[in-house]
Length: 444
Image (tube, rainbow, N blue to C red; front, side, top):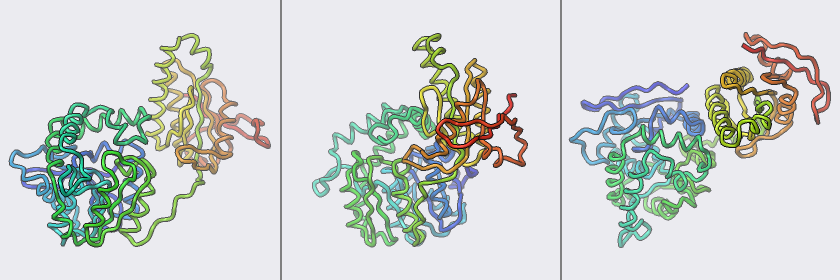
């Protein structure tokens, strides 16, 4: 479950924030481009936040004028001063006297630098992700973008705000994920209005915090993608060269956010920087419950419905499957054309998800079969492999229309729960040695 959202008082305004985890205090800000509630809806972002909270007491908040916080007051001070006031208010409300500050967007990093320079007594460390001291080019700063391009970027962002269009350049690793694209579009609309975003970007492109860099006293970690097209690596190198006691880690990939593309590449250095100890690299082999499903008689249904209606039905199937897997704490590894492959930490949630998918698709006259097995799987990037995956697929092949079959291993792991399973006897699974005892999950 996501942490509770509470409010920090700041004059007559309220700033929404959340706290989770134990360890040294770490205040994370996404500037004007986060939402403390909706960001938990994406599994990748939720996992990144929980990973941060595994070695810190993580404090996240929405800036005024964005997300769950109050609107921007008419007499708002300059953005950097307002930001410093918001951070201090949130820290006070969370009982944090001193904290590390982490900024993960271009818009947030100048504000974090301002806070660290003006309130060093409250800043233990500084973590900057894909940051810059100045974004627009000048005679003494040729690595910035031309002024006319800055104007074009502001207009383009305002015109496309609330759509998925910016993903192809800002988060190219997820550009082909339709569910992610819809979520980003909804997240943007929930964060702020296009006009508010215009104002914030205009302020961003006017900022120049280079004079502050020599004044930063806190140890600083600069993380920068080597191939992020909107902010070349030279910006990160400039920060590392001009901030005393700064360290640069050049990250692989082209995403702007640190969250989705090779997240451990940034999480490892952050953990080591803040705690002095880098966590162990996650194993490539884990115990998981594997769920395979497919639509019964899919070829016949496709011929019956025609291409257009069949594509519409598959879209409903994929959307529903993705939502239910996420609801029950799993991960969709991939869709298979007329089914899906998903993994879960626990077999009870995997069974519940399979039953919900079977029953809800049954409401629209779509029958599926499902197979589940728990065992060691091999993590291969975004994919999984290993004998457990193969066995789950073979168990699915044994299932009849509307049937959810599980292996004896799954049955043993849910023993003692109220989940009733019916013995279906033993079967020989194609390509798998031995006899396998299978159990069925009764229908409603």
